[in-house]
Length: 567
Image 1 (cartoon, rainbow, N blue to C red):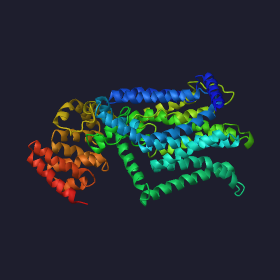
Image 2: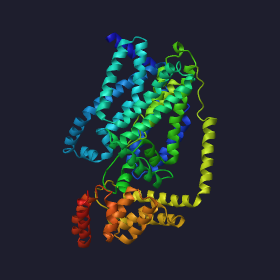
Image 3: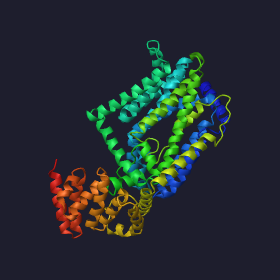
Image 4: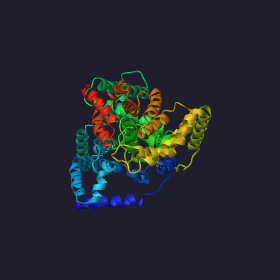
């Protein structure tokens, strides 16, 4: 045992001694992505939360360059650590509840613990969400499968046994998370890998080229997967309600993206924005939506474009490397063959899982954000590699063409874009003033409306360019409600509703404005769509009575009576 341990430690020291910082094909989009991070750090309503997320994303960059610095012949050992990491995540997930309860108990005695626990944005670090754990596990599982194949081929019993144990623990953890989206993405990712040998069996039966047959099988799997998701949702099967809620959440998150369509809302801003402008509650509600929309919201189109370019570039590298491997007969495809399939499967899992969840960027993010792109670079590297230039012509031309198209579009849609630009500035200024110390856990009053008066000139300029801008109308309507100017609020919110009659925040705000204005016949059809409206109206009865507003308390009572009696 001691001999094997010392031999392993010598290998680790040897590998670390051969590490060196390398240029990679993804350096340019990584650079531009981190430039957008600096901008988003400045734009965020909370510099403290944004800085916390920024450092975690910087750790993700260090992980990327640490992995790409490893010589390619040690890629298998990095893949072997994925099994340990996946099993460790499962064990942490199972014990985190006990740990969190212990911290909560300590919080009763130590104010520092109490403040940390009361800031629920940090909960993923203390009590990870089941979907976050599941997303990390399924991302790592293809590498575990590749190590098992290597161990079986080379008859490495100890490596195979240890990896198999880690796989069983990880799969048990994945079952306990009950994450439907994680399982679906895992099936698709491993299906992309597994359909290649299946196509090899079928090519003898069908007169088609193997690659064409493989492509048809992948398309058929994707269509079948979409059909299964549709059935799960529409037939209300196991997990159907969860997927339906995710689709609804994605629609609401897309509305927020429209509010911050220029440069994004800033790092770590989604929870507050979703609570304030979609749920219309003054307290914490949700930490993330899905990968693509969260990135698009917080980093804007440029940041999302460069992050997507990193993943697309990683997929292209692995695809090219696999093509080189498949051009050789099976026994001579090299040690990287299965690891390349594992990297491709992991990328597919991330692409699919990102449609319904956000494992890598939600909340404060994760240091494993660029783990799979780094593995893609590592396993696709040539043995006699000529280092890729940091700034190459392909990336330069792509950037120039993208910027040119953006300039053309801005010239063609000048008027609505100017309205949107002023609405964006107004929304940013409003957030910096309104969300200080968020969550306040108190309803907004005339104090907030007075404080936000300097932001009005942005929205007024927006209305001057486009009288139908939904963002502007919604924000002006909310501020009018806080001033208790119900007529003005209804005027703005009616226009916002006409532009987007499915926006949850607009529906709720307009319904409440109708109640306080004295138009219950218009309010009730809107408020029956809001599950929490009845409970909130009951709270408003005491709230208006305390403020000596008997007429509003009476309207709240009537609304509560109607909503509580409506099924």
